[in-house]
Amino acid sequence: MGDEALALGAINAGLSGAYAYPGTPSTEILEYVQKNPVARERKIHSHWSSNEKTAVEEALGMSYCGLRAITSMKHVGVNVAADPFVNSAMTGANGGLLVIAADDPSMHSSQNEQDSRFYADFAMMPCLEPSNQQEAYDMARYGFELSERNGIPVMVRLTTRLSHSRSVVETDDEPMAQNKLHYPENPRQWVLMPAISKIRNRQLIKDFDAFVKESEESPFNRYEEGHDHHLGIIASGIAYNYLMECFGGNCPFPVVKVSQYPLPEKYMRRVYDSCDALLILEEGQPFIEKSLRGLASEGKKIYGKLTGQVVRDGELSPDSVAETVRKVAPGVKELIHREVPGASEIVVSRPPALCPGCGHRDVYGALNDALKEFESPKVFGDIGCYTLGFLKPFNAIDSCVDMGASITMAKGAADAGQFPAVSIIGDSTFTHSGMTGLLDAINENSNMVVIISDNLTTGMTGGQDSQGTGKLEDICRGLGADPAHVRTIDSLPRLHEEMKQLFLEEIRYEGLSVIISRRECIQTARRHAVKK
View (spheres, rainbow, N blue to C red):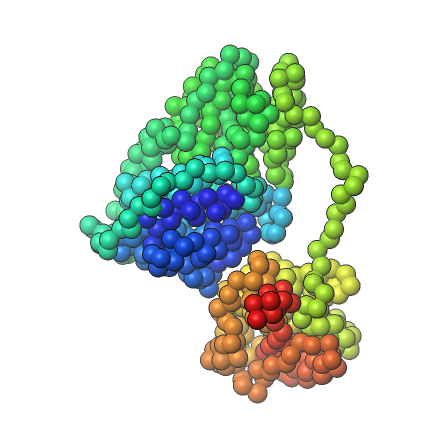
């Protein structure tokens, strides 16, 4: 898989540390490092972090010490990591540092379709976007070298289809040696006080010209000549792969392949000047298209997501790219090697559901029964398997916004006078982003109930370790929650009535209550049973 290719490339390029919080489609990157024999032999750090922010900061600390590190996350995880990510462009990097963002167009397992290239552009940081699995592998070494050569972290942007599709990859014969400990030549630049930050900001602006030059000389960016100049095509990342698939590798139009940012301006100008019209193919949002419209001055026709020729939401595919090219260049229909199939009459959609035997089911069953006694209860949900409690037959939650928002939204609702105000959050999400919200509620003794549905793992992404396992009661009490109202119960069908009564007791208590309902994820329980 693309995730695995990038992870293996990093290992073979002298990786010393990998930091991540699991999130589709990025999870397999750290999992591959954890399982790789070379990584184990070299004692490469590969433990899960509490969240994406801590992961970036830990990787930045390793870079400070001169070693090569990667940090990986899904696109919404970049939001959580934005503070250290943006500021790391100001501190710079010492050892090579790759920040891997795996975007999820079509929202297969996400709240939105945001495009991480905008973060790299905002931070004035170089960005790599592989078009296939071989480039994902090769870009690890290249990215480390780019990072160390320019003294700055480098973003690597993947998308779902590249992360999770498979291809043969040619690898190096021998892994590179890991870096030795060494420290920044100018340690002052790592202290972002205003006087220093002003200097670093000027330097970053100056360095940006060098980043453009690197992009124009990159082995991953190129201009490919074509004989038909009625249309020029700019294709980035996996969209380039789709385009080549449509034409069997022989596109009749000039093509600019973009896999490194900032945009290679000389190639962009060349295709713009030499062609009558342009088609922009990019996965995600119209990042290149907006940039090109800023460069363009002659009013040539530009086809893309903003003009409707390229689908604006969801994923691209070889079929959708073929359909787009047919629309804007109908004269080449016979050259396109793909026939767009109709919708399958055999495959039907299967809505997601909580697994049979899942403890979250019993929590929702008891909670729904308890809430029947109140006029207008509101349950604020969170990110995890238990978000499926929104669907039938439970219809149990009223909101789901981002990691940790269940507790803080319930607190805000309680502040507004809502009763009852209930939060439900998973154990991994609680330690990711819920603890600080709980501290707010503790400090005001907010009249609300927090249910931590503990399945002893990070279930939604496949059963990774959860940072709070075995510690949740101590964490809550340590934050200052009243021990008399930190309650624990096993979420089992036979305890349905007991759970219901516990929920009722704590809802009626005028203050903050924390209920930890615990039952191991049915999937990890099965795996553990097999191992025994």
